[in-house]
Length: 164
Length: 233
View 1 (cartoon, each protein chain N blue to C red):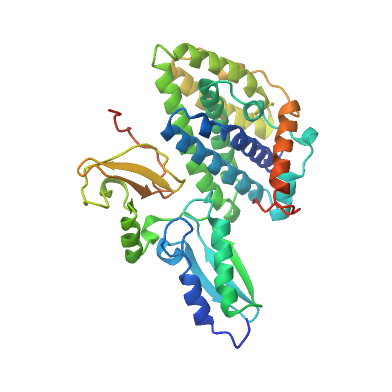
View 2 (cartoon, one colour):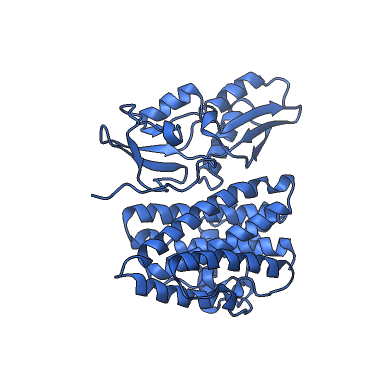
């Protein structure tokens, strides 16, 4: 990396890159794992919420763009690590941001409606509008919402909500 | 076949299965199922990529394998290559192939060290897919209006499954034994009279017109922006 380049500026720019679908930073989402550098290169490690995430190319592109703003001629090496992403990786501010979009990261018996905080919720199937989400229904306020799915919580639902 | 060849064969199977599943997202069995099929198709495409990674292919090799292969060089199981004519046929074919994926990935994991960590994610997702297809078969077999269709579909698809593990010896033979045990357990639970051990072994074919159509369709992917770089994986 060019000695004249301020690495901290690059870090801030990369940390501000958002998920292509939801306006939450990749840092808050737990996707951005590390940023390091040596004299020749900036190294960025990302962990997808799901290995089939279709937003990976877009994320890479936006991260490269963020880096090039401060280091136009620099080399950036982006690595996707295929380790299990975990909902606990989402920061507190990230959880609040997701809740505004009707998405919870809580799992199992801890799942609660992001709108009314009720635990009287039921799953509506194994698959939601995108591969990292599971659809839910709140039996208390009637809202539909989604839960971000981790590998650990990828077990199938025990029962489906009865269709009325 | 060694494990690398087996991993690449499964990568091909899943890649093609993704193509044959995808149209069902708009055939609209119901909205939730469209989401499920779309998600599964998307995930098995990624699984195909992980398997090629495991086998040591780099990005360029992966792209060339999938997008620059001649139709005559594609040798995929009939379970992937034949588009289903009905929903029962689709779920039964997907069930058989997902059992294959689960067992194969499990074997690859056992033979892996650091490079097998991503396979754990694949295995976990394949279990979820398997549960999905199992649930469909269970539900439709329990309904008097659909059980005949599902039984018929199981028989039809079963005849195609002979090219999955077309040997009873070596690594393939071991995988086949596991597949038979797991499928037999489900058949017993469902009350299906078929014996998985009776599947007739046969070699994989080139897929004929199905392969030509696949290569034709993939041609649009690689020429969409006029670039020789596919960059899908």
